Image (cartoon, rainbow, N blue to C red; front, side):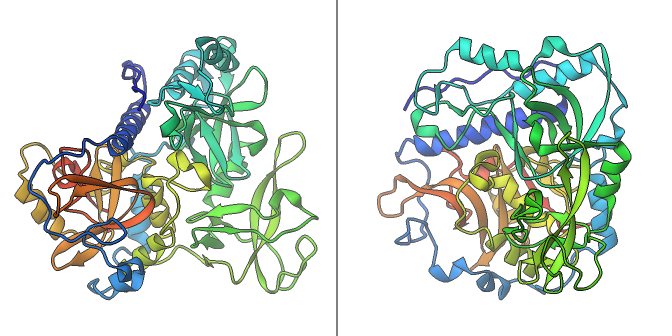
Length: 488
């Protein structure tokens, strides 16, 4: 494997959110590298759990259904948080230390220093750009060309904040470019410039434009990033935030659904909608045609679209009644947590929502988004968000204390280790099991007494206690937080 190097940590002027994201992405990449190159030698006492033919310890095929876990969950249909409690937690997510940025609180006038700081923050990535998509070396001249397109020198002394809504699922980027850059040939699942995703209808504050005029630099609720200009419709602050505040008419409860195909309105035709996306109802009479088709067998919803001049407009679209959606957020129950999380089972790992998929924190946040809860966009922030109830762990906590806490963990609790987050789905013979989006399962083979790694690279069900975060440390001993998402 090629040797990886990482940039220095962000300087003090970087925002806390970007610093946290840098730490998360660095640790996540390190976890992947450790799994890919684990030193397969004997370490601690081996697990006594048998290894299944799939290469996962203490696993059986029936564990791959949500019903297996629902039957074991206490009071699976009991509502854990009512609508008012969910709304209060959602508001706390935008408060200080909640993990999300309240865009309405940003000033109406932006300064050069402020925007330049954001641009610099966005550029920091833990994944060194060593090769491009064709495997050719990345030169400093190539990187400088990308940085020049960010046009930091053209930021005015002051500018009015502009507002917009995303009109489709679109990637957030560290620099204004579609170029795909990687640290090495065997780490192509981790792309250097990938910084996250926006779903249709998400708000942004537009702060700057790239030199080639093809990219907008925006502040999102997740932090600053570049996004394709054609994927953002610009409107007034009132139009943007009024849309976001509308009551949901339909909430996507499937892993991903699409709007009905329509040649009459291509901008809302077969639009991809991920789990948790909430759309207001369109004002359409029963049976009234929408984009050339009757609405009687579908749900009419309202979506933002981008006019030819880039301005914000709204267009009705249809969701089939058979599509996996609900009239509002699902009740927060253990059964719903399990059913929703298992809809992603087998989906390929997608760093920063690459591959039309999601990564570990994307999995956990989208499961809860469908029930009205908003989680921070990365595992580190999820582990300490002031919006959530959690227990923090330090080096002073013994292995036995950690195991005891995990054996008492409840369905839906999140286990956070540096660079990764896992969700508790239940217990078998007192042993905690998780669903996680993970590159590898690394564990001690009971037969050979040596570490063994099984490549998963997908949303998987595994036991927790036998797994290693690297080649020397168990997940349980690396745990920094146990997050009780469903507690008030």
